[in-house]
Length: 513
Image 1 (cartoon, rainbow, N blue to C red):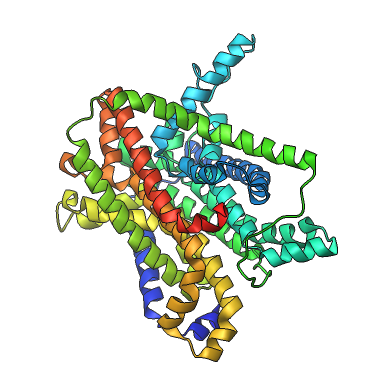
Image 2: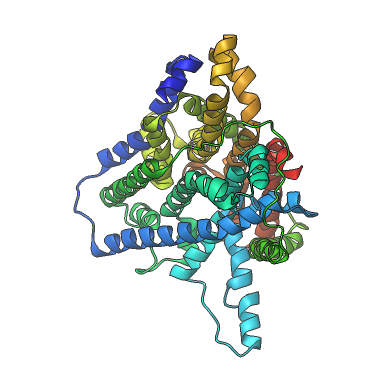
């Protein structure tokens, strides 16, 4: 990594500034919460039960998400069919959905009175419950399976077409020579990302978990802050969460291997393997099952939302404007920071960039509240703080998509760039940026959509005059205006998908070819 930085010859201060901001917003806010804590009485039995539940459900959720994603991504990489581009776009929908909206969709399918239990009752089989461990894991797989598919699919598409042609001409096994090395390089990052997402689960545990046997650390922090105002216990739980994440990040960096396929001529990838009839049937079977699992809950959300569009509240238009402004600004910040860190590279940068996943959004929000309160009314800083927080939380995902592409571009074209005397920002603009357009667009789509659906710090800081669309929907639900909330959810879903599609379009060019 250090050799690549010297070769590009960029100044060090942009990367150092971004890392300093990351440390301030994560460890600094944690320190602020610790400073407000009066005493440390230690964690109780229920807190340790929450830690165990968090680790187990995160491990099982990540394992199932990545395990199911491998055959689905492989099928999408070697099949062409009508609607494939639309399906790949929709694969991003569950991950970018506002959690509470997606849970409504899952309940409509898997809930006590959902489609699945109605079918089981018709067959004379006992109903199943979505609440507890199984429900939390099911919801996490629903949210993260599409992310795993897209990350693994990017790995498959990064294999040059010439390698498949050479393997076909030699009659060599594609799985051993190309697919296994690619999976060995991609899977640790995908598993870690999903494991970390599930470690910080809050809304899913709040709606489908809860109780002594199904409480995550995030939910325990929320209960300690909002119900008991026990900042000392919340700080200890946050410290445990930091420790879990650092261990997971260290293990991932230790087992991750770089890609070694070299450069190609950017030709369309043609697959000569997997063309037997039974292989086509298996591939389309996986694609169909994944599509039904992901799209059916979304369809239920849309059906409920259409009925609520007839009577939108007057406050919905200002809320839409604020949400769009927050999302676009936070996306620009996230992309700038991700690109700077990806160009700088190194294990220390990777560890620092994982801190936002380790940081509980509730603890970070509480820490910012503590820091801001002595100087100004926290409500006045609601939107700027939300912009920074959304960029912070999206940065780990964007960086893990952009950094491998930057590494590959440098590995393939560093010598040629040196021969031409291209260094510094001119080298970034001429050599690197054109070759990372696809992951850059995907990262921007993720950041924009996640920001549109965020209901974190804005709920802690904002007043009614600063409502974003997710906050408005949450308040409509709280006042039992379910039809209006469903309509707002549908608008939010449409805007999130539209932003994701606009940014991701450049990245889908090769996929749709």
